[in-house]
Structure formats: structure tokens, C-alpha cells
Image (cartoon, rainbow, N blue to C red; front, side, top):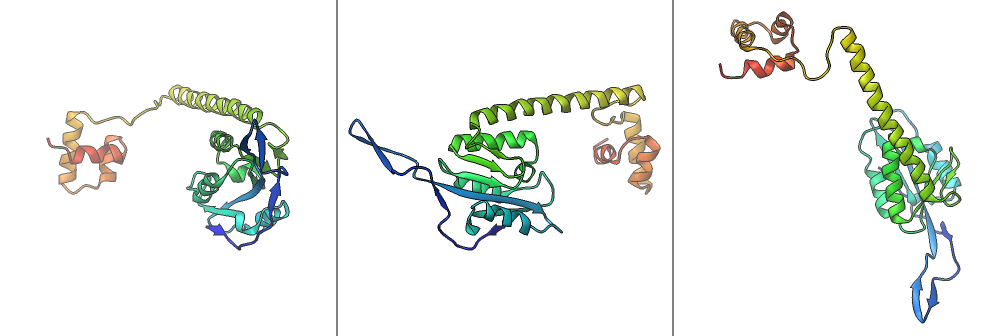
Length: 218
């Protein structure tokens, strides 16, 4: 969903000359920095009005605010993809908070890389992050360190969970498969009209494991 009401006059000048002359050659310079806003709310029950008002107050024109309504933090964000594709050198992407922009530190790093590639800036109001004041390369490097930390913590947490499960006599990984005799017994019971749930409970395997054996040739 895109919030769109055409207004003009919200371009922010970054230099006074469109061109400079260097050795007789005309070299383009960034003439204006366009403020582009992005907001995100839950698919149901969340009003985006406050975010949009804050973006307007920060200098984003109403027709340059893009809004995603997503069912979760990892849901598709077509409007975010669109605004990132629109960014040009000198533009400023404005968000009320980093949690509205990205679903994780890893995602934030990916967004930061796209901003860096476009030579655009980021302004997050809640966190007072403004790469026009703090060099973007430094911010991106810091985010990459945090992303590495998140990967390490996730891996450590996974290993700790598996170790705890093993200590309780459980093992991680794929569910156990049925041997030949158990598979034959499962098909016999299924042929007698027993339910998949009943057979799975009797044999001590998940129903998803059982389905593969029921339809496999003997």
C-alpha cells in the first residue's frame, strides 16, 4: 500500500550549483536531496497515522511516504523494496524507528548496504541515527559487527538447546524413520481403516513421517 497525495516543494538543497567545471569538463553534482519516508504497521489493528505525521513533520512530502502493512516482521515488504529502488545519490530515507525499517539486524545490514550502494542517507527519528552527520561507512561497519554477533548468538543458542535436549534423552535433527517391519505394520493398520493419528501414536512417530511410508510401495 502506498500513501499518495501529490505535493511538491519538499526537495532539500544540498548545493547551489548543478555543475562544476573541472579542467574544462562539466562534472555533475548532487543538486537536491529528496526526503523519502517509509512506515510499517501490522496488517490488522494498527493505525499508521502517527508514523506518517512524524515523517511529514520531518520534511517528507505526503506523496513520498510509502507504507507497508505486513502480517509479521518477516512478511513481504513491497513498498520498502520500492522506496529502496527509487533512492538516488543524496536522497534521505526517513523512518520513525529502525524496527519499522528492518525485521532483524541482518535485514538492517542488507538495507544499509543498499543505501550505501545508492549513495543515499538514513535518518531514523527515534534512535537519532542520521548518516548525514555520522559517516554511512562507519554505521554500516557497526551493523555488520552486530549482525555477526547475532549469527553467533543464534548458533550458540541452537547448540545450547540441542545439548539440553540430549541431556533429557532427546535428539535434534530429522524425525526418526520407520524400519521395514514398522512400515509394513503401518500400512496394514491403515488398510484396516485406522486413522493416521492413531497409527502414528502407536508407532511413536510424527504423522509427517508416517505419510511417506503409507504411500510407499512395499
